[in-house]
Length: 361
Image 1 (spheres, rainbow, N blue to C red):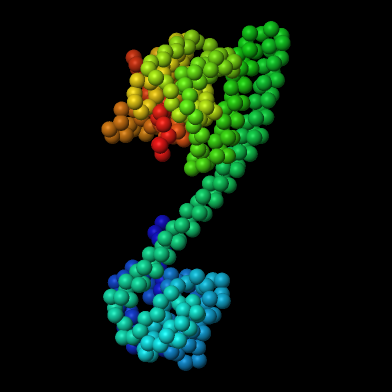
Image 2 (tube, helix red, strand yellow):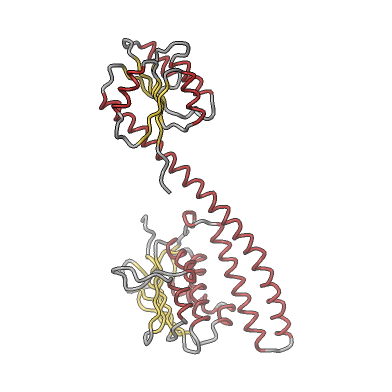
């Protein structure tokens, strides 16, 4: 879709002056529409959207000042910038009246073509920026409406069947069926992920701000591994290793959500082998949380986790996909990042890099 051509209105009761203006703007990337009287200019203003109006001051019946006052009184044209053009002598009273009528500038004839073109360029650029800003605001409103729809789906269309699953799992537990315990824990974890999604959706990316405190990353990760829901979900052994100084500034609630997301993916894709979690605090500026296992997910799962695009030039690991997007977003809230890979004979690796201190310190 191409951008619409900007239009400029020129009003002058002398046809030769309008011809001269056309010559000045010949070849410029906008359309110059002309009128030889105020009433004719009003008709054009009703039919077209203008980025700028060039008004002659001295015209019969309706002079430039009167036309400007009518423009400022109408919602459609009140924001159109006006430059007055006059052949009269410079007069402070006349200039004051022009600015009072809504002018943004006042030029005297004979006009300097370079000055006029420069001033017109400024206002056409401003018009383009205002138009772009309006489009972005409209796009933001559409995203907000879509976000509201997603929140509604999460609140009802997903929570309702999860409640039914949870009730059935509880019945299995009371009957002594060992599957019921796993089913109940998995349902609880899924419900927790829904709460995380709702929380993130209610806090757009630019508003998702960590409130960091000094703490031990290893202690937090150990606590998440030992959480009842995660213990029930991750049925395979979890091997934990701590290397170096694991202290960093982080938001405990947000980092806990990110760790839960990685444990959830491990529970789904690790198979029967162990899950290895290593906290590396040997770097001066960051602490790394590495979660790995020997299994390689299916091709569709790999695309879900790491995205379907090719690796980016210069990067050893691809971008994350939808399956890791929440955890990656939480890492970015700390000024960190999340990367990962899955390769035959190497297994699967998720690595969360967490700065030791906030970026603004």
